[in-house]
Structure formats: structure tokens, C-alpha cells
Image (cartoon, rainbow, N blue to C red):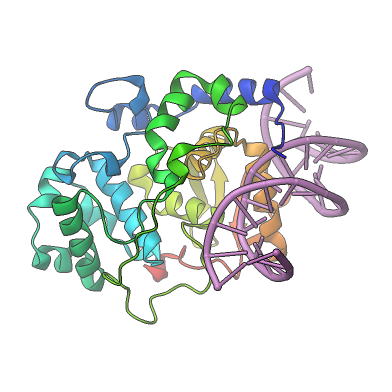
Length: 274
DNA sequence: CTTACGTTTCCTGGTT
DNA sequence: TAACCAGGAAACGTAA
């Protein structure tokens, strides 16, 4: 029923990759209580916007765009290099100035969060709510995390709240993008936000769309984090990457280890796309 | 409930 | 020897 994963492999990969997580992530995004659980930052959902760090603001931005199925490359991240306190002082006009037509969506999302402690727009998947637990599992007990992924999880039963509010305008939808981003979009977004990307992935040739993994296992850990999968490894991530060759989302780069190239079906990575 | 999609997991074998 | 690459096969989770 549940696939039994190789424990020894998971343990070794978790432990070995932990040290590869870039220092900037832990220093920049430590939690307020200073515990190790904050290595990847406390999820923004758990705190009032007022108390968000810059990273949590960034997470909220990403998540909001994901939920509305908007192209993350439209986000002018440099306009949101601020913490939660500053974010909360922004007016609708400020948002519009900072994010154009997207400003309204962001403003409404934030307003709901400020008042209700949650968005009324399906943001709270079980995955999101589980992050607190996962932080502990990931950081403090990678062994249990890889072995004991429970089959019965009480928080799985989250009522599906759906409101019409904040619906993106027609034409801003992506075609068929089930909740959250795809792997290649996740990779692209790391590349497009170098200030948030402490040497995880580099452009080899910006105009050709050629890039290189610098910390392959750390990226895999982050991807796993996003997918709530603590046993993700570069080995497995790279298999998913190879499937993109056929769909021409990626092109092969022969002879270069850890190097990939965006293909004709990958959108939003070019400088001119911004 | 069924199906399609996008992975995830595992594996064998090859290369750097 | 470790780390990576290629791609088949099958399982899995989710959305429609």
C-alpha cells in the first residue's frame, strides 16, 4: 500500500544534504525563537503579517501567485524587499505601484490575512498547515521524517473553503497548472530571484537559458520541502528534469554535469519576458 | 469512480 | 570510488 522507502538511503541523503543548505537561508530567515526549526523559515501562514520576515513576505508573494495561477515572473520582487511591518503599511495605491495590475490581488490577500488570519482563497492546503510539524521532522529528526510519513494524518481533513473573491481576470490563468508550481517553474523562479538564491543555481548563459546547479542536493531539499517530501534527492529530481527533454521544456546539454537548458516550451525565463 | 498528468521511486547500466 | 547521466517501468497524488 504505502511504498516502503529505503531508510538507509533516506537517512544518508538527509544528513549529508543538511550541511549543504546555504548559510544565507538559515541566517537570513531564522525564526523569532531562534530554534533550529527556522532553518527554512517559519511559514508565513503561522504568523501575523505584521511579524513577517522578508523571506515570509516573499513566500506569501509566491504562494499568492501560485494560488491565482499567475506567472511568478510577473512579480517585481525587488519592490517587495521589505518585512511584514513595512508591508502592512502599504496602501492599495502602493501595491498597485509596486505590482501593477497584480497589486489589487495582493492587497486583498493581505487585507484578509490581517483581519482573519487567513485568506479566503484556498491558500490553506493540508500541506501548508503541516509545515510546522515538518520543520521539526526535517531539521531535528530526519530519520523519522523519512521513515514514518504517516498514512493517517489528522490535519488532512481541512475543510475546503472556496470563495469567489480575488479571482484573477480572464487571460491571466495558466492553462493547466494544478495547485502550485511545476518543477521547472520552481527552478526558473530560483534563477530569477538571485537575491533570494544564495548560489543554489547559476546562469551559465543567460540569453541561451543555460543554467547549472551549484548545490544540487540543497535544491532537491527545497523542492522536497515545497512538495512536503522530506526524502527528495537530486537523483530523483534529476529524473523529473530528464522527462522535460521530451516535452521540450528543457533541452539536453551534453557533457556538462549539472547543466540544463530551457527549451522552446519553457516560458518566462527570458529577460525580455519580465 | 476513471483518467490524464506530472512527477516520485527504483533500477540497471554507462560516464566523468 | 563518488557523483552524475540516461531512460524504462511502475507507483503515486491530484485535479478534472
